[in-house]
Amino acid sequence: MTIETTNTVYVLNGPNLNLLGTREPEIYGSDTLDDIAGMLEDRARELGLEIDMRQTNHEGMLVDWLHEAQAEGARAVLLNAAAYTHTSIALLDAIKAIRTPVIEVHLSDPMTREAFRHTSYVGMGAVECVSGHGAKSYLIALDTAANQ
Ligand code: DQA
Image 1 (cartoon, rainbow, N blue to C red):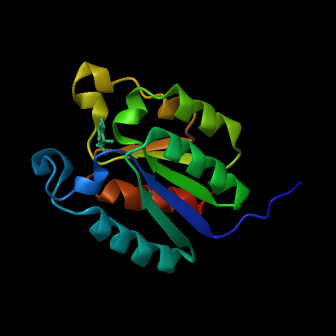
Image 2 (image 1 turned 90 degrees about the vertical axis):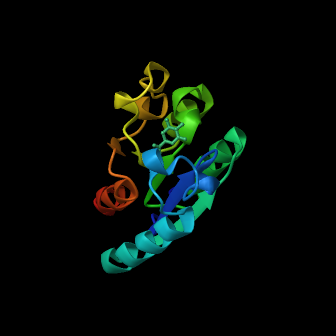
């Protein structure tokens, strides 16, 4: 069955990102997830895209949402899987199981942080990674999604 691709980009956020704004602002900045959603919606409008922004603290929910992204014909997924980036083979398998392109996003640059953040299972399946630009990482990733 062929699924028609829509103009919707899923923006999936993993654990602890609901606390953005107050969570270690020296690392993650002072923008809240709602602030980021607002910036993404403005940019999406310019690009003729729609944003479906979500956050969960639960790994399996991210797996379900990746499946849903394909079933709903999402153009692409921006995925900040937060700490699950570095631990979740289930997320890697989900990314590989769908044809929807997944773009890995991080506010910080995990590669310049603790060694346990240097492995990215998400990155093993993602088409691209944007990290280290704070909230702007999401906007850069959205521009990439527009070309998918
Ligand atoms: C993060 C980086 C991860 O290493 C960390 O576990 C996070 C946030 C980021 O956006 O910089 O929770 O994904």
